[in-house]
Amino acid sequence: MNRIYETVTECRICKSKNFEIVLDLGNQPPANSLYEKDSEMPPEVPLRLMFCNDCKTVQLGESVEPNYLFSRYVWVTGTSESTKSYSKIFAQKAFSRLSTVIPSVLEIASNDGTFLKPFIEAGCDVLGVDPAVNIAKMASNNGVPTIDKFFSEAVAEEIKQTSGLRDLVFARNVLPHVKEIHSVVSGLKTLLSEDGIGIIEFHDAGLIMKELHYDSIYHEHLFFFSLETMSSLLSKYNLNIFDVSTSSISGGSWVVYFSKKRKDKTTALLTAIENEKKKGINTIAEWKSFALRAIEHSENLKKILNDSKERVVAYGASARSSTLLNFCNIDKNDIKFILDKNPMKNGLITPGTEIPIVAFDDFVNEVDKYNTILLLAWNFKEEVIQDLRSSGFTGKFIIPLPYKPEMI
Ligand SMILES: [Zn+2]
Image (cartoon, rainbow, N blue to C red; front, side, top):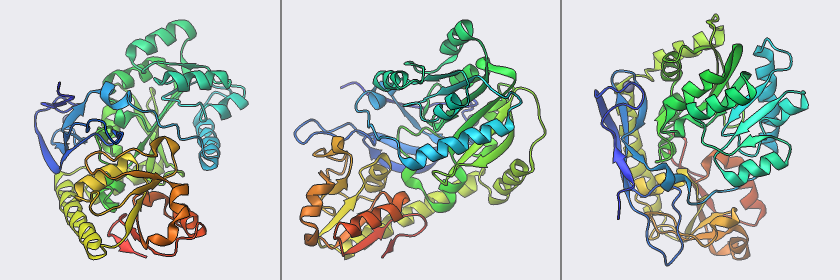
């Protein structure tokens, strides 16, 4: 079988060879490679976090072929009410920073077009770009014009030729996943007008470090940016970050605003950069300390499971949970099955840990047989616990993260 990955020999951002591995999470199959019961097991790939001593960007030591990662399954998740309301807030924040009243807008990885809709309602000319053919088509059918391509410098040139520059370009939660990141940033610059602004949203590396979100390290997630490292990437293209806000939906993301023209940095941005410095988020020493805490955490969690051996099931078969289970050596011997509400995952097996995924309704029918649930979807804790309690579950929950595992 052909190898599906390569080990990097230089930093993806600055080309330096002066980098170090700070955390080895072992060999794991790519997190989204759930498989059918009798089919071949997915291949394992080293999962290692590395730190570039020159540009300070935290990234993975291996790249898995994008075709392998992104062509297997598309998990259609549907758009929640909270996402819709956040899309309106996101648009308001953009309008308040733009000099154009009715800007032309471009979003990359625009998915079903939810975040472009508030701009359409304000009368803006919008365009989405998304590589998933079916999703791009669905968005276009719903009134959000969308091109079905991987965004790149070449695609940006094509758009510029056919429909001109944009007053607003934005990319939410996509840059950390893109191997060809230089082509994407260069493409954003190509399409941005002289007076326009760009917006990038990304999971905050500082929060990953502080709250120990090691489960957000998986092969699809190549980069872990801080404000400083994102800023130095954009500055290679003469794009200047001038403001920042936080994302209300994930609670753990930065939203940065940048422009071609140099603008004064806002107090919010200066304060956030200062906080990053104080906490050492761009230092290898703090990432090594994060690694030690992650290892200790994984051993504690495994011990909690060993101590409460009876009738444990888990909730939420996501990419994040795949890393957590593999890194903590929690497998089918510890967890009878994982509940998941996505019908497309029902009946599949988790990669590397071989735990079957069971539909929520099937669990509800025999809810009194189980007394402990490991809450893998811990970032939706309140919502999930309420849901399980109202389904009749009266047992305990093990909450693995953030910080220390706890039993409630
Ligand atoms: Zn570097």
